Image 1 (spheres, helix red, strand yellow):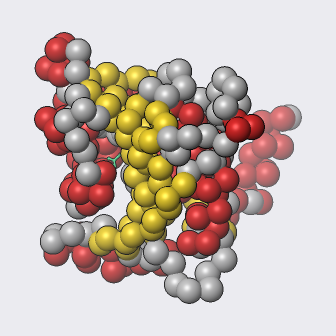
Image 2 (cartoon, rainbow, N blue to C red; image 1 turned 180 degrees about the vertical axis):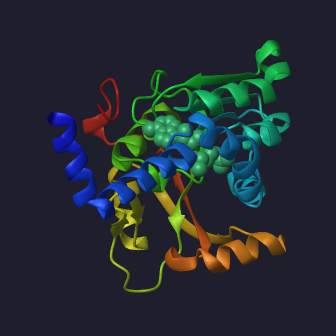
Length: 256
Ligand SMILES: C[S@@+](CC[C@H](N)C(=O)[O-])C[C@H]1O[C@@H](n2cnc3c(N)ncnc32)[C@H](O)[C@@H]1O
């Protein structure tokens, strides 16, 4: 009886069912990639679609030899692999088994040498002690985090005093656009709300810059033009964990 009832419900709500199926496919594809869709996305599509983001973020991060770099939601590790030669150590964290596996393959030699580490985990609960890294980065991912404030708090916590955050948080939006969510899941933030959110996590010296997510690629420019409903330029937020914390936060962890 229950099966018949469920079947009738499905037939009477085709739109709802289609939307749910589409959302599920989108999550497998780009949310936390898994299954066959995730396999295709992680191996073939994402590294190409994001190919212009990596150099932009690399330039923005201004990495130095002594840096210990953490990338949260590191995907298949392309950015870390590109930057690894410039810093002391690179560390990536991602929630997708597929991505973690690919990133470990990509960075295998450095992992064996002890200068890289890839961890499976949640950006909202980082498995490192306070003040571990000198630079934290995140790209192409923030807008899909259900609790972005929690991720910011964690990034601030694991950053050493004086450390830098370079975070791609969404894209440029038209003036007057209010913060909202697309499909009830993807965040679209106004610049003002991003600024507030990042400052509330404790970051100072905030600067926001924009860069094309298509770079020099004509193909990516076309993709950008047709997916342009929420903007075309990457929003990059630069912040610092102050070297001196306010008196109230000085005992133990700064944020917990
Ligand atoms: C669109 S991909 C971007 C990957 C990578 N940053 C890049 O640019 O190639 C988004 C990534 O965020 C990861 N992700 C989503 N939610 C996460 C979470 N809560 N914690 C860690 N990783 C997460 C996904 O598994 C996926 O690899």
